[in-house]
Image (cartoon, rainbow, N blue to C red; front, side, top):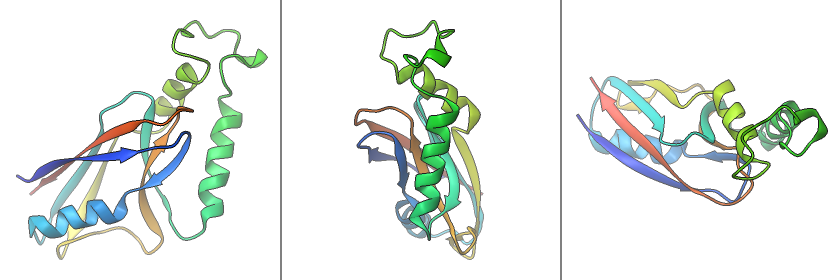
Length: 140
């Protein structure tokens, strides 16, 4: 069964689309049908399927999650104990817990069965740049 590790470089918090790279992996595997499992190997970022047409959607999602879970040095987050790695770390873990680290996408006719406006995104929850590893596994 084909699999690979895709590396996504981030510049800080936000959504980073990798639909094209995942689609290329599926095409190269030359499978008509199957299930692409996408798994991110980190605890402070996550994966989402989201609209890829209007960039306002990505900006609004990013703003929503920043308001929902502010940095741990925000007065509303005084209850947080895990602060050793900076004020963005524990909030990043919370955001990852609220979203997902693995997604399954059907493959039909050799292509990802995503809807017209759907894209695959790494959702970076940390402030500083990171190199994130995403495992792509195509099963039958």
